[in-house]
Every structure is written in C-alpha cells, then in structure tokens.
Image (cartoon, rainbow, N blue to C red; front, side, top):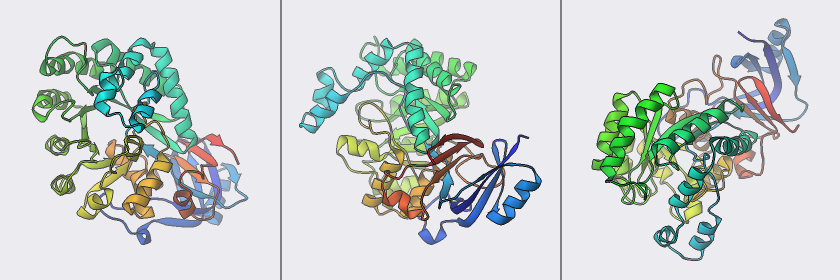
Length: 416
C-alpha cells in the first residue's frame, strides 16, 4: 500500500471535487478547504481535512511529516492534454516570417511549415527524440504539470511514426511526469508518399495501428480534419479501423475551417481540439455531446488568430479543457498556466472554469479517472504555490510558479 506522508498546514486546497464536467462554473462553486492537511499513502491520497485533525492521524500512522511555515495554496497537478513535444529542430525562421507578413502557405512552399519539422524529426535518432521530450516534460513538471499528453505526427511514415511513439515510451520510463502518447499519423499528407491520401491512411490503418496496439505504445488516435490535411470522407475508414481496434479517438478540429467537430461527435471522440473557427452550429453540436472541447491558446498567440470561443462553449453547456499545444511551429511557448490565464482574460472565464480546464476536465479529455481532483483514493499529484490566495495564481499570469510539485506522493520539485 505504500508508506504514509503528510504535508500541511495548507492555507487553501482547491480540491475540484464535485464540480460539474460540463458547462459554466461560478467562482462561488469552487470547492476549497482552508487550513488543511493532506495525508498520502504511497501514490494515493489517504485523507484530506483540517490540518490539526489530519496531522493527528498522520502521527498515529507514523507518517513522514512536512510542516509548512508560510502561506501555501494547493491545487491538483496540472494536466496538459494536447502537446507535440516529441520533435527535433526549430521553426524560429517560420515565426519571424509569419510576423513579418508572410503567409503560412508561402512559408510552407519555401521549405518551412510542418514538413520542415518532419524532415528534422526523421533525421533524429530515437534516443535524441527521447532526450528532447525529457527536457521539455521536465520543464512542464517544474511548472506544476504532472500529466502531459504527447503526440506523434512528425514522422508520417511507418518507421518514423513508430520511432516517435517508442521515444515517447522511453522518455515516460525515465521521468516522474506521466506521458500519455497519441498516434497522430494523420497529421498531414506526407510530401514524399507515392500514392493518394486514402492509400496513405489505409497503410497506416492496416499496418501501423495494429503494431501500436500489439506493442502497447498508445491507446489514442488523432487526426487533423482540415482543408489542408484530411477531409471527413478521407478519415472515415481510418477512424473506423481505429475504433474497431479499441483506440480512443481525438480530433484536431475547426482550426481554420469547420467540419472536424462534426467528425469528433460522430465518432464519440474524447475531445475536439482547437475550435478557433467554430461557429454557433459547431458550438451547439459539441454542447449536446460528451466530447470535451479543448482550447489551445498557445496556437492562437503563435499564429495571431482568434481564441477558441470558450465562453460561448461553456454557456452552451459544453465541457472546456485548456492545453498548451506545445509544438515547434505554431505554439512554441509551452507555458500552460500562462496560456490558461490569458485565455481566461480574453474569454472572460471564471477562476473556477480555468482551473477546471487544466485539471479534472483535462483529465476527462484523456479518459483518465484517477487524477485532476484531490479526494481520497485519487493520485497524489499536487502543485503548491507560495501565496495565501488562490486568485493570485491566475492574476500573475504564470509569473507565480509552484514552489512544490508532488507526483504520485513523491516530492519531485521544490524551491521552498
């Protein structure tokens, strides 16, 4: 069962317990314990409650006790449910050209864009890719992000997609954060494939997906539904194969044109991510489904485009998670807390809605039921901030970083 450990007194604990998975959330509904303590047993939370009461239990159980001597706010370990941190190279040139007025299409024709990253990622060894993931994931962990989704999608061939997923698995075995891999072989149509889009997807469906299943490299399959990537009709046989093999589906949807959210609802996807181009029609469609809408403010900032209509989605009754989209092209920042705070300011999200979007609603987008909420039996994933008031965390827009990060009951970062 594991040894016992205790931390307290904690000025405020945002448990996120009993918050609805869907719809708007007023700040008055934000669940909070004050002057609290948390007792952990191994990887799990054993008891939460008043510091004095839980400390007495901890002493009886001969727990390792950590007493805090300054005001601290604790929240569940953050969950970044959409990243592309398995890659090689940089696209700083693309970013400078884009800001100077060069279009995305012009950059791609000049050798930039996703294909530039594909070329550099293919040239990298599995070991080099794993080291890059470890470095980026460690940075996320120190920012309080204890669970990180990581996509393939810069390989776009059987051996290179497999190499990326194996690199993610290798990195996951070497770090404290949990990496949740996703196969994004349907990211774009590879320029060097001799055949049609349908033939490419058929090859990936019939050869890559069974291999991933056999080697247990991922339980998730993603696709980019977009005019410049794959259409609803083209992706159908691919998703049909993925669902028949038992994969969870997620979709890059409505980033530049609509259609992807409809596919997400049709296939009962875990999430539809991006949604910057979504109209009231798509918003209502998502709100009537169980699909989590994932906002990616980093991509909006990187491309200089509209934010996901998070306020409209929530008011319609949808569930909204927030992720960093950390990638070398459109979202190089990789700072989840900063992006969530900025999205909240622009979309007028409550503090409760923002925290829900990077904890328990993000967990739902990944199909994870053991984290994102601080209650007995859940994973002891915690981020502690040196402040007496939880509102300071978003108010400081990422400049207030966690002082302590605990992953599965173990201290993995501290600057107290």
